Amino acid sequence: MDRTRVRRALAATEALGLVLIRGWARTRRESKGLVFLEINDGSCLGNLQVLVAEDSAAWGGLGEVSTGAALEVVGRHQASPAKGQAWELHAEGLRVLGVADPESYPLQKKRHGDEFLRTIAHLRPRTNKYGAMFRIRARAALAVHEFFGQRGFCWVHTPIITGSDCEGAGEMFRVTTLPPGEVDLAADFFGRQAGLTVSGQLEAEPFALALGDVYTFGPTFRAENSNTPRHAAEFWMIEPEMAFADLADDMALAEDFTKDLTRRVLADCGEDLALFERFVQPGLLAGLAAMVEGPFERVSYGQAIDILAKAGRQWEYAPQWGADLQTEHERFLCEEYFRRPVIVFDYPKQIKPFYMRQNDDGRTVAAMDLLVPRVGELIGGSQREERLGVLEARMGELGLSAEDYWWYLDTRRFGSAPHAGFGMGFERFLLMITGAGNIRDVIAYPRTPRHLGF
Ligand code: 4AD
Ligand code: MG
Image (tube, rainbow, N blue to C red; front, side, top):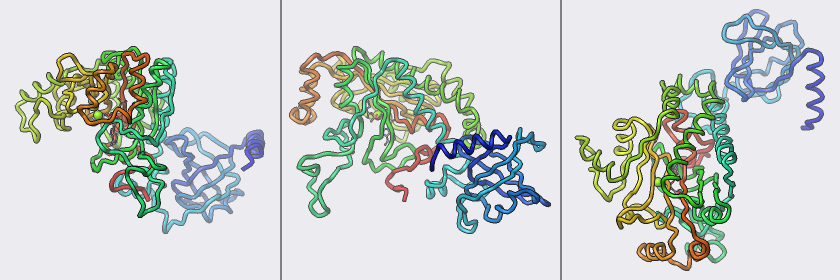
């Protein structure tokens, strides 16, 4: 479309006291000599009510207008006598840009369930709830860049195709250049092994050790076959990495970042969030407001195990030093015991990846997880092992080849420095801020073992 021409036409209609709007019909209601259309253009929750009178030039175009049709309407906007809207549009011209067959258009004027809407991920942003969701998502993404930009962090674009499995959990999707039948897992990527990144951290660390404070924000992938409401095979992660920083700095950044992001979304997405408060999670807004006011709790892993052991609960998995915290434990800590976000730090080294800095006790590493009510783990991070000898020894214990990680070890050979960082799952943040219960409903096209979308 020639934007200049469109702009000129718009300016001309405005000069005549007319406005032009384009959007999709949500409803059509007939009355004597009048048709009422509700039109939504995706910019906000509110629909615009359009009145088409029998004696107007717009009347002739009405034949093909049904829910879902794309329309262009020119008219005069006037104060509305109807309740719940400040003004309405009296149509003088109407053009159907795209029809939507009422027999087969899947979205009708009723509330559809999330399960059903997942099967039409390409149409669900046309509903109030998902329109609001994806506006909130966009605002939150912008807030990420505002927060780090204002603090002088440099955005680094780490690769999606990579040779290193950062978390060492064997959850990398393999990338292959070979035709089916010739797949060779050790040499798929032009003779070498490669996969889709599970985290940008390893590639971000060298940039922190050059530029000071950096962050990544991009898609990450996990080939884990977990069908939970909080795990996806493709999700977005935000990973800050700071040079000359320790675990305390890392925890402080995690808290500030979570609160700041929440504040920015609360400030700008009030109308969209109110929908989630009303239909998804009563008390959502008061809970978020309280969260940004109060301090987050900090508790060591050892203390957390003690609290859980003394809770007098029938656990499905008995809390035990050395074992990972289960969802039931994480939720108990932040939802019942502390009733606020909790940062658990100093985890046993055997349940954490090779790159975390070993503490002097010989059993724990300078790791931290931020747990939030309803969602569980929102952030995972650590101070990194900056001592070459200690890092090499740990990699040896875990059977990681120093040759494969030569470039990573170089950063410890040349000008190594204490540094720390974390990863926040962007979808987990959206679960927290919207009250949505399922990760499939906060990402445009969910990829999970059961959802490829189409
Ligand atoms: O705890 P994780 O695995 O940590 C890392 O990947 C580190 N390399 C991050 C770092 O220190 N730079 O993942 C970080 C966060 C989790 O806390 C969680 O919020 C999210 O990423 N996450 C997932 N979100 C959705 N689906 C999954 N399958 C996820 N796995 C992790
Ligand atoms: Mg984690």
